[in-house]
Each structure stands twice: as C-alpha cells, then as structure tokens.
Image (tube, rainbow, N blue to C red):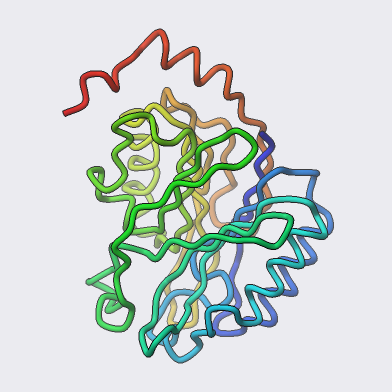
Length: 250
C-alpha cells in the first residue's frame, strides 16, 4: 500500500485557494493508493469554521471526488459540514469511483472553543480499501486511547488528520507512536504546517509510524511538504502472529 500525506500550510479561510493548492500538489505526487490532507484543510482551524461550513455534498466533496477519480486513489481529509442546522468536523474518505464514507470528530476541542460551535460525532468507524482495514480519527481524538482501542484487530491503519499546534508537538509525536504500539497497527498522523490567521504556529511533525513505534517516514518540521511511503501488510501480520498482545486486551 503506497500512502502519500501532505503537511499543508493552509490558507486561512480560503477554501478555493486551498483546493487549488492541493490540486497542484496532487498533480506532481508519486502514484499512490491513498492521499491524506490535514484536518480542516480548506479553512484552517478556528472560530471562523462554522461560518464557512459547506452542505454535505458541497463544492469540496465534488472536488475531492474529481481528484480521487482523476488520480485513481482514496482521498482523505476533513472539512466543516452543516447538516440539519448543526456543524460537524467531518472526515471524508472518497474512493476512486466517487463513493465515499464519513466520520464526525468525536472529541471536539474544549480548550479552543471548538466544543461550543461544532457538534460531536458519536459513531466509531472502520472501512476497508484494497485489503486494508482503516480507522479514521481527527486531531484531539488521539488523546483518547479507549476510543481508538483495536480490541479485535479491527483495523490495520489508523489515519489521524490534525491541526495540532507546534507548542504541543511533543505530545503529538509521543501519542501517534503510543497509539501504534498499543494497537499493533500503522499510524499516519497528518498535521498542518505554517502560521494560522490568528498567529497560531504549526510545526507539523507529520509522520507514518509502524506497529513497533518506529517512524517509517517523517515530514520536516515547519515546512509545507509531501511525503510518500510504502506499507507492508505482510510484516504487520507476521508481527501480530509472533506478538498476539491483543489477546490480553481488557
């Protein structure tokens, strides 16, 4: 499985500019099975998100369907959706044929005020693609191991789209490794880079971690960067057979 992730410097509040930027990056990206962008990649993360919410099948979804089809890949990212009068930080995975699934961020960030303007999701999700079981999560979800617990080896790859500030980068890098080790899975943490519209700094520190907690690929801190890595499910299966730690999960 070839995975590409984009540590994106998001243009504050300008969905069209961000879509154009990602489209240009995709055009030069290596051939991949999955392409991942950060949380709220069209707007950035802040109080302005709700005002920029799209309808469920709005312009970003239609654009993402076009990208998935054109490049024959699974496109993964989050943007804010307004449905029945409520806003959700909704992660989308779009298949090459245009069909898609969604996961609403379950742990909205109380400290930043997201909790007050964005509704919490309530459903855990796992989906399959090319023989891989994949679990989606969004940013603050990473701090809640029970929510992400891989009790019965329900998933092989945990995808975390984030806007995790540089001031807390140590927690980010530690937690993506911890979730990989404890859940016997690969973890991709795709975080944004750059400075947002209110002065918040993001160092990114995006990485793909293997099931032993070792980085297979890491983006350079603080820069807008595209990273591609190949995952080996055979190695994951062998490790799980030799170390069936999941049999002792409570």
